[in-house]
Amino acid sequence: MKILGLHGCKNRTHDAAAALVDGNLILAIAEEERFTRQKRAFDTSAKTAAGYCLRFAQKDINDIDAIAVGYNYSESDKPVFSAKAIEQYLPSSDYKITKKIPLYYVSHHLAHAASVYFTSPFSEAAILIVDGQGEDEATSIFRANGNDIKLLKKIKVDRSIGYLYSAISIFCGLGAFGAGKLMGLAAYGESKYRNIVDKIFNKINLTNSKCGDKQEEFTEIVLSKLKCEGFTEAKATMVFNKFGGKLEKSPQILQVHKDLAASVQFFLEDQLVCFAKEAEQLVKSDNLCISGGVALNCVANSVIENKKVFKNIFIQPACEDSGSALGAALWVAKTKIRGELSPYLGPDYSDEEIQEILKSNKIKARLYRNIERIAAKLISRGEIVGWFQGRMEYGPRALGNRSILADPRRESFKTKLNIAKGREIWRPFAPSILVEYGDKILDDFVPSPYMLKSFKVKTDWKKRLSAVVHIDNSTRPQTVSKEMNTKFYNLITEFYKLTGTPAVLNTSYNFAGEPIVCTPNDAIKTFFSSGIDYLVLGNYLVEKDQR
Image (cartoon, rainbow, N blue to C red; front, side, top):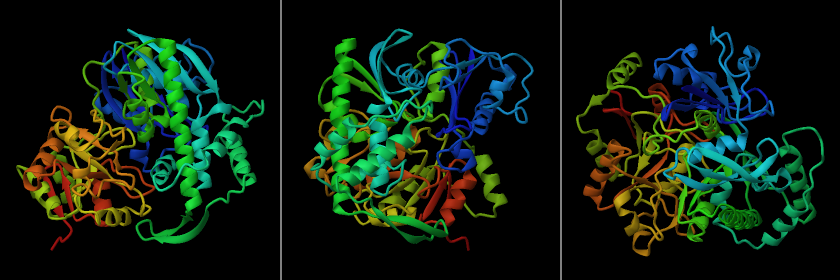
């Protein structure tokens, strides 16, 4: 069966995405934001991403056997045959459907569960889903065996650690979707307010209103209780973003906000360990799959791993809501995927296509046979390189196909790159490390191909990787294997030959507040308006000086 998975509609959604599955193969996945250039694709369908998936597979919408949506709007497990229902996701102005296609509504946490278990290497596992909320739950525990997944327990929205984390992110001036920033800020503080966070959390009592989305109500309660405890919300000043060309709010973060961030991070870690222990007791498995937006918290993931509650842990790269499109499709297919999960399932561009785009933009570029060696030399001498290769990765982390690369040995690059991208100066960067050197560089090492775990850096490597070591001596690496990404692996290998360092600094190819670049035109536009020194498009090298 060819199943099109979708997430996103006009009613309070974010991270709209589409995935196309054929039997046990994932053909294509993409997020709507990459095409529309609207960060997180709020309150919109994934119609453009769906179009890409169909074009890649050389299919028409009428070749699809079923459509699956990663949220249960019908409160039924049975498919519906309704053109009006499909219209919300695939408008008839763009999709001419001439047959009856069954539309399956898959509950949100079940879609998350399917997205991580069916792509995992496990034949059985416990599954832990933690996010803001699904339909009426914030946390769920499932048992998976073979091709079946069963719900064992769900925890109501009043106990949403996802919403708690988001609310404190707002209070610290980082926004409702600033969880990644708050995780980084936590390292600058002490968890001296963890008892206050616990008290606030355990006193939250949401009303019995019929409104399904409880985030606004939850947030207002947390902000009010924080103020009652004597905390002052971070104030914002207006600063000019020269890359965005406009005035933007910039929070004045004080030590109290750093300590509050550390406190909620500690609380989240403690809660997740408790959930993991409960999942182990309920399922009695060696294997744990984790998904939901909270699973993007690399530090918490590694705390769970280091507690050794489970022998094996798996997290897929799009564990936030965009992954529910994939999960919905896989749940309807009821099958595990073939082989190891690749994150590179988005659009790609051949050298011939890139050449035409360069010509149409009147941009000079040089074609190289070994572009990996050329790029490695540039990085080793201190240049910042935009790296655009192959199929775009999915999920929020750049994994070496739409990346900005730099020398991880140069501590000054922390400030330089943050300024170049319009990010807060204190935010950390991540390395991409050859997987076979992981245990030499990192404590308690396990492979982390999707950049979803955090490790302490061994003492003798801290100075050698000073641009990617956070203030608490941690780092959030991507481990790179030749099998998963040969070209990126070869680049890092060339850099290792030149420098003795088997890693590069890897950050997403975008400005702050923008989606990761998708097309060569996106990459070119960002390159010429940024502090990036060189751009590699496929096997072409573009320089700033076009004389």
